[in-house]
Length: 376
Ligand SMILES: *Cc1c(COP(=O)(O)O)cnc(C)c1O
Image (cartoon, rainbow, N blue to C red):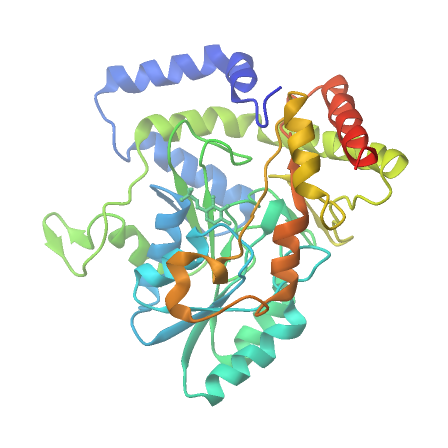
């Protein structure tokens, strides 16, 4: 069994994908181009944002978004310590400093009850707080309305790190179009995945869109005329065409993911009442980038080992919160700084999840997990 079965997905769309890849090879045009423009138009319509800018990865999208706001040394960006490293890495790459706020233990997303006091504290200390980067972890949007309201009151921008939540619903709207900027990733294992690195920036702001468009091509505004120092952060033609094929199947895949999640949740409730399934709030829908459960303290690692021994792959997203990573040692934060993030890092376990998983496979996952936990 695979954790995310990309081979089955390829087998399902092989003819379509092979045809478009072949067409790009014949065209001789490999960077940007017509396929990307169609992808940008289709995805901006889908998420409900005026502008979509294809980029080379989610990480580069976050960096470009911060650059578009002119974030640099001396600035601070508020975010969550319980996410993939890229969220805070992008902040450091532009020379700014990440400031963490602990998570809500039910959703694993940034705790909006703690957000304002951290911002006030940093401002009182004289810091130049510029923006907030909330993350839709595991495929569920954070509390965007509350975050936007705090940002507006404090004069901050909001960049939604939607690298795991493309397609997620929030109060009838879609992830990526819920704040000043949304950034997503098409890394192969994300819900909408390319066959290589790729990402996209979404915004309603013409000014930000123009900046990002220029910054992704070396800050170029005319041929060999550079108004700013930018990056090489373009999305290539083969990935754009592959994404167009996969996007046509995306809603169908989301439905399959949701059905698989429902199967897991029902079986867990019957067999393992001590294991906490994902908690999706009633005003939003998850795309289940991961199906992540909380295993009672102390049992997670042994359960995972047992399951892996039975041929069931699992993963931990993420075993170490960012404030404890050696890369962020200079922030001077230690154990105990963000207790909920630290507890989640010890207790979460992601189960195999993809649109092509069978009911039988899911049954064997739950059986192995039940056996693992009852043997402890
Ligand atoms: C995957 C991911 C990223 C980075 O995306 P890449 O395309 O791999 O650069 C950033 N943030 C989060 C939350 C992610 O899951």
